[in-house]
Length: 286
Image (cartoon, rainbow, N blue to C red; front, side, top):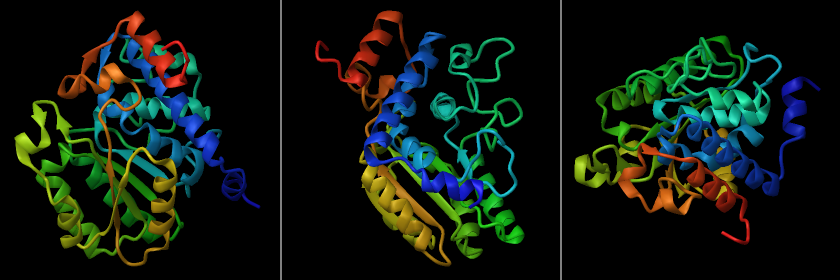
């Protein structure tokens, strides 16, 4: 049994995936709290997805981050870098204390992901939309190598207003990239307001279907639903998949959720950090 199969054989149960999501959320709070400000809303909204991916589906090896035939994950919504770091720390790619160096001088954890600095990061986050194009290119490369890898990509709903997303989507469909599984973090908010106010996407599922994608719409905080959707996507043939995650920006921390659009980037002091972590843990006195 090779290392990847061993990992799948030891895949986490649904209960431990939920616990991993809590760990990732707590890591996010500590990571962003260490600098006092950051994109907390869009980080918390993908914690459940990351728990399912890193807890079960990604064929990766933290001891060998550059293993050739590994699966890849591209976080195209680059402002969610701290969420990726929080998952990587939970998986043992680097020490958890490194999370406390976010965006500081000499850190390997810049505000937006950099594949040349951080173990486990598969693609540098550039302008919104570019990451998805890179994921499509990776999926094409994997097909050429015939290495059996899946390429996962996470895009934002505000990011989906970028034309580059749809250019890449056309190519993915044309090349029948059934090894590409993408996710839209559909929390309906972006930096300047709600998505509906700025540039509405609805009907988003029909748009992706019209571009030749296999499409599934689910609750983005239901880890069992996420797991099932990914498993079904892997059985899909000759079409790339888009899984639209209906999410809540800031999910898991009530005062962040209640901030609405204001949680896209917000300050976070020590008292708020402790309150947030207590709520995530489910402490009875919160």
